[in-house]
Each structure stands twice: as structure tokens, then as C-alpha cells.
Figure (cartoon, rainbow, N blue to C red):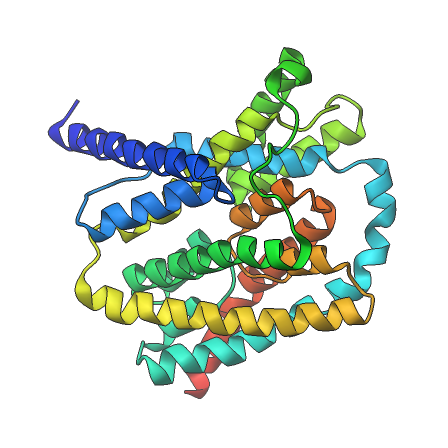
Length: 348
């Protein structure tokens, strides 16, 4: 093992210590989403204090597949029959993305002075990794993009449980499903293999969000065919939460005072404006009867895909409804964002 590998594993070990400590503190204080927000908060504080951390690499990515499995295993014939009823609210997703772009791009370009590719991909509510790849290829500032999107996700995921408790009195400290002892080892084994296979197949096909989308599709097929009869147990969802929270927090590792002032400041302001915009859409959809209040809230709040799935599972929301809206948003952003960016650049 090289010295660089040793340093990497030391940073990962340190990160895991902070994450577990944060989770333990949040559990002790009975705070909402303790295994997601605890590691996220602890790693953020450690990064701001100068700790050098690193994410968990492929192992951490594999644990994200558990969320895709949870969604896929929830797709039953009954849910498939209900999909046409979602068409009304799904039609608002393109308008929602357009409103976000019109709000975010001028904010980052004119107010904070970022260059065109950085401002454009910072404004896009797509998957973090996809926006970083597109931004890098277009010549944008990858570090700024990483911090802005991480701050957006952190702020929205922190705000969501508070609002859900106020409006719906949702208990986000409860177990997200049945324990492993009730699910059965055969189902757990099938799910864990399906997670790995689905992830790797999706990577081969270059699908966006491969670690979630691939397992979700494969688990849905297995669920509809009767092979998978249970969602991932509580312990698997807890493990996924911890490592997802950790992965958001470590993005602040090595942060400077200038990055806090500009990049994090921009991300926080953008998250607040996005929350206001989202609440306007959510209120309209709820008042017009196009979507139930809690599901509309989770579907039109642009946090990270994995993070919003975690909250949906914990809240006992309609996963098919929430995920279908987030998937449509991601498909539209990933498909159209590079095209529109080039058009804007030519006209600029």
C-alpha cells in the first residue's frame, strides 16, 4: 500500500468517526433524521475546523443502492395502475425547472460574478455528479459547483424535516421499515445482489444516477415478477442514510474563508430562494388538487435525489409519486442543460 493510500484510508477512518459521533448525538437528542443529518452536520463542523476528510469511495456508493432498492421494491402492479393519475402534477415539472433557471442563473452570473458555465450548472437542479461533469467539460469551476450544490442540498434537507413537522407532524425519528429479522435472509441476499448488479449495469449503460436508478429499475422488475416481496430492512436504510449524510459533509473538506463567503454564501441564498419558489408550486398543486400536500412537498423540493428518497421513506410517503417527479426533473435537466448552455453562450 502506497503512502497516498495510507493517507486516504486514515482520512476515511477519521470521517467515519465524525459521522458516527454525529449520528449518536442526534439519536441521543432525539432530533429528526438522526442518521442523515447527524453525520452531515458533524462532518460539516469538522471540515470547517480544518479536518481533512474523504468519502468512502465505491463502498459508500454501493450503500446508496439500498435507496434505489427501496423505491423499486415499492413498485407494485397497483402503483403502476396509479401512474396516469400523476400526469397533472408531472406536467408542472418542466415549468418548475424553467423557473429555477430564470432565478438561479442571473443570481450566480450577475450578483456573485461567476463565469457562464459555473453560473449555469450551479443553477441547474440536477444530480450533483452530473452537474460537476458538465461544468468541468464546459470549463467551469468544479470546486465552486461542488460547494454550491452541497450547500443547496444541506440547507434544503435540513429545512425539510422542520417544515414537515410543522405542517404534518411527521415523526422522522421512527424506524424506516421492518427489521432484518422480519424480512428474511433470502430477501436481503436478493436485494443486496440486485443493488450491485443494477448499479454496475446502469454504469455500463451510462445512466445518470446509476447507483440509485439501476437498482431501482432492477428491484421494480423483481417486485413486479414476485421475486422480491419486501423492501430493504431498517438496518440497510440506516446504513445508507449515514453514508449519504457523510458524503455531503466531506465536500466541505479543505474549505477556505473565501469559499465560505462566496461559494457557500451563494449556495445558502440560492437554497432560500429555491425553497420559496418550491413552496409556491407546492401550494398551487395542493390547492388545485393535483397532488397531496406531503407528496407535493417532497416531489417539488429540489434537494438531492438520494436525500429526498430517504426523507420520503422515513415519512411513509408515496415513493412512486415522489421519485417519478424527481426522475423527470433529472432527465430534463441532464438532457437539456448542456444544449441550452451552448445556446446561451452563443447569444452571449
